[in-house]
Image (cartoon, rainbow, N blue to C red; front, side, top):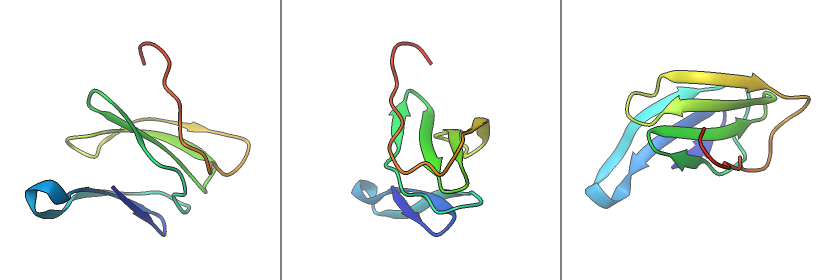
Length: 79
């Protein structure tokens, strides 16, 4: 995974790929992602937590918070 500016990149260095897909946000991505099954969760400086499909980069849902998200999400139980 590589996060910079307002784009979240999914990469797979182990298989020699440089970029599988990217997902644009409206703020910098500071947090490390968390993966559960086929969903990647991460927060952004645009005050949003995103849930993105790991295979297609399609947005599953997003949640607007009260401020920038700098820490990694936490998953408990089924999501």
